Image (cartoon, rainbow, N blue to C red):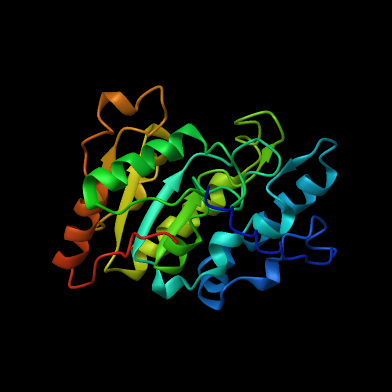
Length: 240
């Protein structure tokens, strides 16, 4: 059996008056800090609400804004998820990804890996850490960026959509090469913000829906083809 990869340490940010939950509002990539300047007050409000939340929430505070610590200018693919996995020890602030030690993998991610192999020939690793995709220019963005432990969808009314809308709009305004990969109805709610951006839309990889059009949809090669049409390079989808 292949040993599990070691989990990187979760960054820790001291609570401040503006950021009592310790999300690290001052530790974003400079490009993302500029892109999200208009919703900085909302991020402060969200930190206040999370700090006052009586029940445990996920992911760890230092991982909540992890997607915005990769360079804004390097994003070539926008991959939108719903909200973090509600199981403690699983979410890492990147949509669909889990901590390297997690076994078994979430069933949605297993289906993503099956389609990845069928579409590109890339053999998936035993772990579910998608950091390599993030570093290759894939923004793994959850529509809602926190969740109450054990209660999927519990933070959908907290106000994260204003932040994720701003992120999507900023990318669309920046221009390409950029392709959006939107699986499922929740992800596809950002489509009106993506004027001029090629979109690969499809069924969510959940076991409840994957057999209704996700398998065989070849999303990875379609994304690469669109990036090349825009004059860019395809994504290295390999995960080590």
